[in-house]
Image 1 (tube, rainbow, N blue to C red):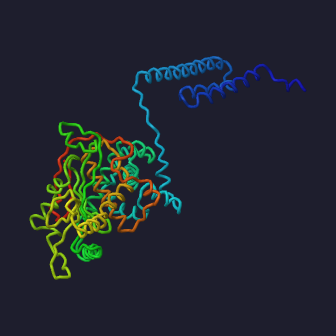
Image 2: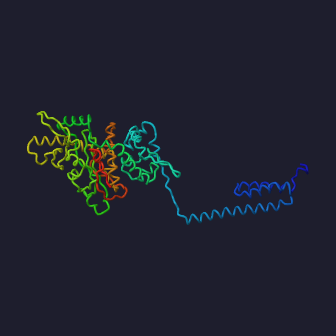
Image 3: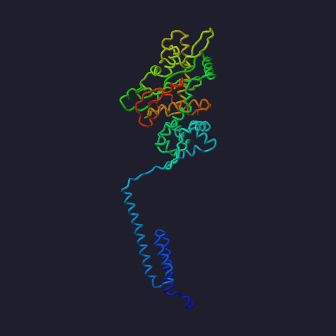
Length: 442
C-alpha cells in the first residue's frame, strides 16, 4: 500500500462525523425541522469549512440533546396526566354471530333459522317492509347500525330469552342500541303488519267456518283463552295486583285463534290477579260485540233443521255464559250426551292450547320470568304474535327438537334481566279499526 492510500486523521474524523450525523438524523426522524437543518449543515461543513465544523458539531449535539429532553419530558407529562384523567375503557365487541348469519349456504341457512326463527326469505321480506321505520340516517359523528342487524338482534332476543348484553355483544352492538332496537322493531312490525291481528273476512272466514263445522261446531270462528307472561315484581303501590295464584307476578294476555292456530285477536296488559272473565269484559272484543259491531255479530250457520246459529267462540269454564261464547258443561254434565259434548268441546278448543305452545316454544322469551318494562313487553308480545301468523302463513316448519325440549308450563325457566318495569294501565288505541283488538300500555 502506498503512502497515499493510508487515511489521514482528518479523513478518519470526517468519516466518523458522517456516520454520527447519519445515525442522529435517523433517530430524530423529522421531529424538529430546525435540528434537521443544523444536522444537514454539520454533514457538509467538514468538506467546506474545517474551522467551524467543531462549533457546528457542538451546536448540533445541543439541539439533539434538547430534542431528547423535550421528548422524555412530554412522555412524563403524558403519564402524569393519564394518572389524573378519568380512564375510559371500551369493550371490544365481537360481532361474530352477525357475520355468521350473513353466510350463504344450506348450513348457514339452518343456523339462521335456529337463531332468528324466520327463514332467510321471510326475514328479508319483513325487513324490506320495516326498514324505513328502524333505519337511522348517518350523521357527522357516527354511522347507523344496519337495519338487518337491528332486526336480527330483536329476533334473537325474543327467540332465546337471553340477556341483552349477551345478544348485543355477539352481534357487535352496544347494550343501549340493543334495547332500543327491540322497541323499534316491535313498533315497526305493529305498524306494518298490525292488520294481521284481526278476524278473518271473506273467503278466509268461510274456510274457518267450514273447518270448525267439520269438527261438529257450525258457526264457530275461533277459540279464546288467556295466558300469563311472568314478570318480576313491579315497582310501585300497585305491584300486588300483578300477583298470580301460582306465586309469581304476571301480565295477562287474552288471545283468540282460528282452527289453524292463527291469532286473530290480542288484548294484553292486565295484571296477573285479574280473572279471565274480567279481562274479557274489559276488552274491546266484548265492547264491540255487545254493541253490535264486529265479526261475531254478523252471519252465522244454518243447522240441518234450518235453525240459524250465530257466530261464537269456544271458551273454557272460566268464561261467562254469553250468546257468543260456548263453554263446556263441566260439573253440570249429567248425561252421556253432556259428557260427549264436553269431550268434543275440549278437543276442538285445544287449538288455542296448541297456539300458546307453539308461540312460547318458538319465542322462548315469553316462558321465562322477566324484569320487564310493561310498555315494551306488550309491544314485543304483539309483535311475536304477528310473526307467529307470518310463519303459519308461509308454512314454516318448527324444529321437532325445539318442540320436544319446550314446556307448556308457563313461567318455567331461569329469570332473565330486563329493563326495570313500572305499573301501567291497559288502554285500547285500536278502536279506529274494527276487531283490531290490541292494547297499548301507557
